[in-house]
Image (cartoon, rainbow, N blue to C red; front, side):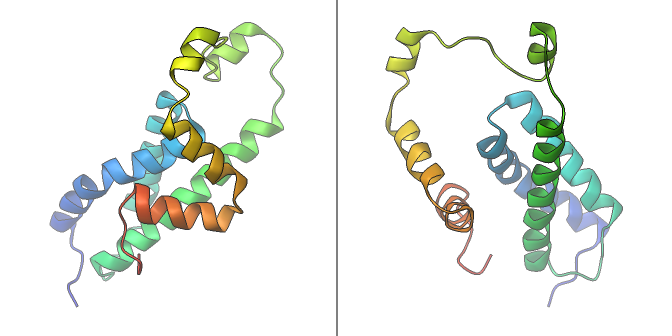
Length: 139
């Protein structure tokens, strides 16, 4: 069993940054929020880094940290009330959707998202991890 050291952590970070960002973005739907949450996730991982962990369990742990960080984000997000347009824009709202653009963007990816949203959370997460993030069955 290979042990994770500080030098290997940088490689681990580079290999997983894109995966975590795409996972977070799929959950929050906002580029800036996804970037911020991804940074928070890796900061939490660095602060709690266990150098004795093997790389495979590190990835599993990384996604566990990501799930709890996203859950915390939504808990805080829904707790507050937003009353002004400025507050909405600061929170990441991107304005009204242009109906013409919405029709053009109504593609297979949106259909997949609709289908995924109809599934129970556990099934949705399994499919997202396996097929969109290309994680192994074990991970």
